[in-house]
Image 1 (cartoon, rainbow, N blue to C red):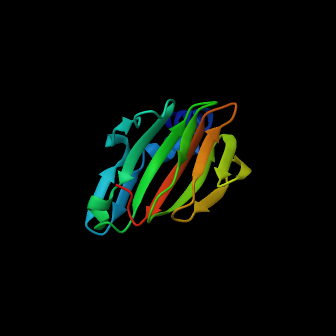
Image 2: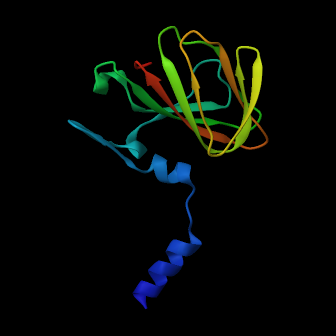
Length: 141
């Protein structure tokens, strides 16, 4: 009976990929932590945008950083560029648009996109929350 109940609960309480990722462990040689223990924060002036620094340059000696990003519906990461970092994003959930220089690119769950250093870009959520990861090489923070 207990096994049946666990199977039922597993089937009925399905978690989204972003929830699973947020509750996961981050492990690499010489470092391990729980993503859940990392705090969310909102950069000044970025209304409706929340970041969680999963891996920072401190842990990687400046080689890369990795972040979880939540953008509330109809909000945006405003126009910006990174002087030396490549940015690679993977969309876990949601939809919206990616403005790279002058080109608007529709984005949705499952897509990945990269931004070279020095390229201005904006990420806008559509009609639901947009959840993505952002990896920077070299590290952003």
